[in-house]
Image (tube, rainbow over all chains, first blue to last red; front, side, top):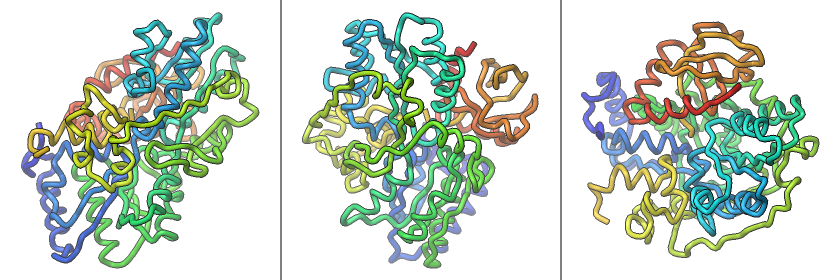
Amino acid sequence: MKMRFVDEFRNPELIRKTLDEIERIIEPDDHFRIMEACGGHTYSIFHFGLQELLPKNIEFIHGPGCPVCVLPPGRVDEGLEIASKNSDVIFTAFGDVMRVPGKKGSPLNYKAMGTDVRMIYSPLDALNIAIKNPDKKIILFAIGFETTAPSTAITVLKAKELDIDNFFVYSNHVKIVPVLKSILDQPNMRIDGFIGPGHASVVIGAHPYEIIAKEYKKPVVISGFEPLDLLQSILMLIKQLKNGESKVEIQYKRVVMEGGNVSALEIIDQVFEDRPAFEWRGLGAIQNSALKLKPEFAKWDAEVQFNVEKITIEENKDAQCGEVLKGMLKPNQCKLFGKVCTPDNPVGALMVSSEGACATYYNHLYSTMSL
Amino acid sequence: MCLAIPGKIIELLDDNLAMIDVSGVRRKVNISLIKHENVQVDDWVLIHVGFAMNKISEEQAKEQLQLLAEIGEEQEALAEVKGYQFE
């Protein structure tokens, strides 16, 4: 059920006060374009109908913060090709990855065709599969922003400690700040401020966003996921914008520390290093935007241990995932939206994950939208 | 996969593991990322892909559980916790 009426929220009084304050500050000539970087935020904004509660001159741009959505389709194929060509390989991945369409199909399609594909809930589960199947080679298709990278890193350290030699990580871990910078560097891009991701920031804290605030002069407010969290974050952003400021602020203080999780950052540094460049769906190659295992962990690096055939897939030229990811098109303005590309038959990754902007649009707005 | 799930630590185990309870579902999670926070039984933590990411208050944990229920992700979160099969 969509919760469009203030009284249905918890803390309706606080919601109303926050909305009143936003309306008091904003002036008719203002037009603020705010990017929510995180797919979880996109989901909450739609689910709770926040756009409809806010003044029309606040516009949300849905950012690249869903790791499944920004993954170039070739990466899934590369991992699956290793598994389908070697009968002793087990391909493991999180549930979100299972339906991502590759050239010859999704991991689930490969499973149906006989490849040993298994869904896991934690990188540690993949390591356990390796321990239980010593005659098999287990590939962990690792994915996620900084939220997930420390968990993969600990799993690699554990494999080293236990001297497990049949466990391999195919790393697709990505970093949030380089992609935000890359979006700001696009020509004709107009974003006035960012709602920073809540859970990636648990790990990295507030400092890595300083470059966005200082060099690009765009305010960043790290937000929680409740309707009140998001509205407070928007109020904090608008106050900065009206005062001509650009600072990094944390609204989600109950969960995010200024300096992040120091242990998690140390473990990422211990196991991973930046890739010189990594291809993002619709955004092209972005420098230092992704993580690969350090050479000392090459024994557990699938890209080193297997002959990975580089697969480039020409995306359906009518699919406009890139423009949507850059905030230049709304999902429903894509030629394929809702007609060819649906959650049941996704052409682009933004329609696959429930946190993808297109799936969110489809699921929450389809009934009220003229297509 | 990105929403974190709140759980309560009910037992500290060897090897950086702890038994946690999420709405009655009990599974082992890894707590090495929050060891520096001196974790104790009865502490609430946010869990992501089988790892405790940080400590939170009981009140925050309940808010987060309510949020998961409101956005219809509670069952998915419980399925995820049930999925952790650490030895």
